[in-house]
Image (tube, rainbow, N blue to C red; front, side, top):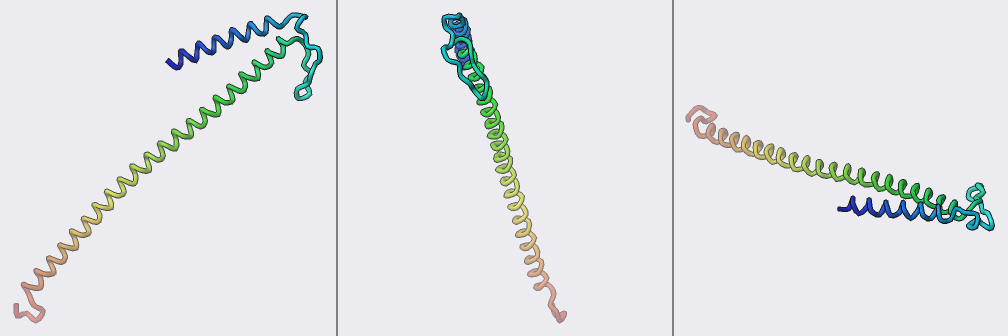
Amino acid sequence: MIVVLGLIILLAAVIVGVAGVLGNASSEHALTDGFAVFGFQVTGSTGTVFLIGIVVGVAAALGLGLLLAGVRHTYRRGRTARRELKQSRRETAAISQERDDLVDHRSADRAEKAAEGGRTATPDGDG
């Protein structure tokens, strides 16, 4: 739906732009005083100025689109990295818990064996 709406707005903008340039291109719409932009002397009609404005607007929209695409890409990459970090931390916690359980189990086995060894035999051999 958004794509269709964007296409309709783009088509309307093109129609208005073409009508504005062609409607103001005659000699009766000539600029009375020329002006300069970055050392470039602009002369002609108001249609020429309008066309230059359209070109500048398209360039600005393209730059903004590239900027937003870059931000979106960076956001997605950061989100993926955060998700992977969270998963890695969960895995690390699970492995640490397993290791701690194994260490506790071994300690209990050693203590049990030591207790059994103490009951069955005495150091002086009287057991």
